[in-house]
Image (cartoon, rainbow, N blue to C red; front, side, top):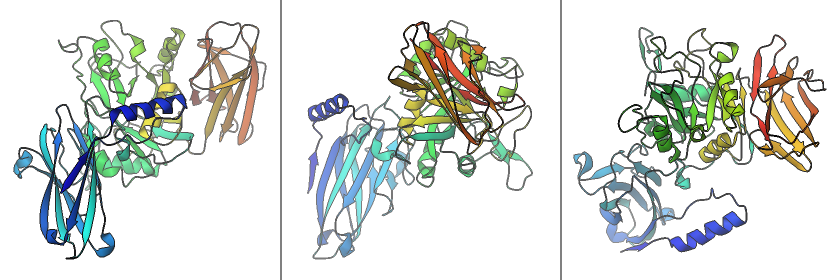
Length: 510
C-alpha cells in the first residue's frame, strides 16, 4: 500500500511571510510537492514494486529523496524511475541506481548519474523499487519526497540538491569565465600529438588545484555542461560549480551566470530582434548577466567579441561588466575598466567582475596574446556562504573585488562610514552635505604596493598616506560629502604601477 500527501501551499506561504518579517534568509528547504509512503514485508523479497505518482503539465525537473527503514535487519531496496511512454525504448526506464543513491534528479537538460536527462512528460510516472533482500519476518517503511521543477526556476532549487559547501560569511575566490569541451576549449591529447576538446573534469581539477572556491562553467551558448556538473559536484565538495554560459552573438558576448535554462541567443532574428529582447529573457532566469570583454574588436580578428549593439540597450537589464578579462588590465587597448566606469557615471550600479576566459586548462602561465590559466584574474566575492544562490546574489549586490593576478593569500576590503552606518562595496551610503565619510581599506599580502582612490571616474589624492608597507595593513581617510550623488572605489597598484586589485564602488546618496 502506498500513501500520498501534498504540502499545504497556504501554510508554506504564511511561513515564508513570517520568515521575511523576521529577517530570516529564505534559503531553507522548500517542502516537497508530493510525499509517497508505503510498507514492504517479507513477501516482497526478490521482487519489484512500482510506486505510481502523477506529474502535472509544465514540469521540467523531478527530484526524489528516498528513505526506508530496516537496514539494521539487512533490508535492501534498490531504486529506479520510469516515465509514461518508454523513453529510450526501455519500458520507460529513465534510470536505475542499484542501492547507490537516495537522492536524484532528472531534468530536461541534466540528470544525476544513473539517470537520463530529457523531456519530462506529464502523466503517470513510477518509482521502481527492487528488493534484493528483506527477511521473512521483517517490515520496511519507505518515504519518497518528490519536488517538481518548472521553467524559470532558479538553478539552486530545490535546495535539497544544492547544500552550501561552506557555511558562514566569507570572501570566496572564483573564476567566472572559462571554456572546455562543450565549446571551443582545447588541450593536448593524451599522446600529445593533437589538440582535442578538453574534458570538463580537467577544468574542474585545475580550478581545485589552484585553490579556488567556485567557478562558472561558461561555454558558448551551451548548457550541456550542466549534466557533467551533476556528476562532478558531489566529489568536488570544496569547489562550487556554477552552471553558466557565454551568450555569444554577432553584437557582443555576455555571461549568464547561475542558470541552465534555455535562452534564445539568435540576436537579430525575428524572435530576438535586439539586446533588450534577449536581456528580458535572461532577467526571468534569476541569474546575473555580465557584458564580457566589452572593448574588443568585432571583426575578423575577433568575430562578435566586442560590445557593438545595433540598437540602444536598457542597461538596467544588465547586472555586471567583465572589467578584467584575462590579463587585459595590463592593456590600455582592451581593458574593460573604462567602459565599466562609463556605466557607473551614468548612474547604473553594475558590478565589476573578472574572468580568465581560459580555453586551455593545462596552461601553467599566461600566454601573451592568448589564453590564460584558470583563476587569472580571480573574482573575490563576499557572500553569506559558499552556495550558488549566495554567490550569485552577492555578485548582483556588488560585494566583489577583482584580484587581477589571482594571488592566493592576498586580501582586500573596502568600507565607508557616515554617521552610525557602515557599508561595503556595492552598497549605498547616505551622506548629507557637510558630513564626513570615513573610508577604510584593509589589505593583506601586498607589501610595497599602494592604494589609489577613484571618485566618479577620476583619480583623487586624499590627505592620507596610502602606501602599503606591511604584510597586512589598514588604511583610512576622510572624504567630505557635498550631499550629491557620487561613486567611490579603490584600486591597489604594485610599485611598478601594475594593477593588482580592482575594487567595486560604494555609492553615495544614490
